Length: 111
Length: 112
Image (cartoon, rainbow over all chains, first blue to last red; front, side, top):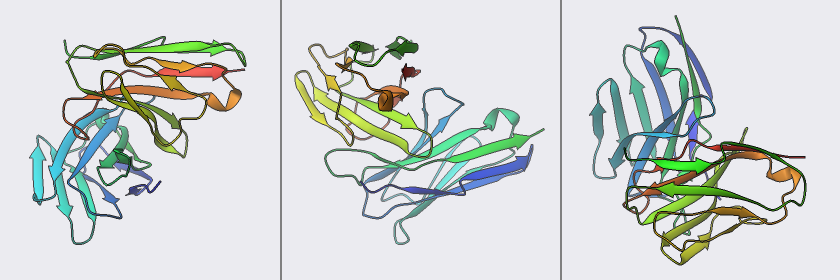
C-alpha cells in the first residue's frame, strides 16, 4: 500500500536548536497526524491537523499543512535531550479504512 | 488512567507453538488495531476492528487471527508462528475512526 514519506530519515542537532521534519503524501486527506516514539516504546500522539487547517501549535510543536503540495512539516523549537525519538506522520488517505504511516524521522538531540 | 495494555511485553517462542498476545483498553473506544513494526518497513496494520464482532484485514494479515468479543479486548493470535513473524507488535485504539490513536507499550516477539 502507499506510504507517507518523511524526510529527513535522520536528523542530529544540538540541544536548543530547532528541528524540522517533513511528511509528504500522495492522495487527498481529511487529516494528518504526527506521533513520537521513544526507542522501542509505544507511539504517542502529538498533533492532528485537518485538511482545512494550515497551521497548528502545541507547546513547542508547530505543524503546518500544505494540501496543494501534499506535505506537512513538524517544527520542534528549542529542542531538548528528551525530544530524542522517532517521529512519524500518519494520514487517513489509505483504502480499506487504514491509516497510512510514514517510515519516520529519527531525531537525535546532542547535549 | 486511560491506557492500552498489552501482554506479554516480551516473548520468545518456537516455530509452530500457538500464542496469544492480549490487548485491552479502558477508554471505551470503538476502534482497535494491531500493527507490526519492523526496521525499515515502518508500521504495518495487521487487523483492525470497528466494533464488537466486526474485524477486518489490514496490510499483512497472513498468519494472524483476531477476535473482538468484548469492546475492551482485542487479542492477537498466532496459530503457528514462524520466524518471519519476529517483530515488535503494537495494539492501538481510538474513539474516532482514523483519528487520534492510543498505543499500547508493545510486545517484542522472537520466534526461533
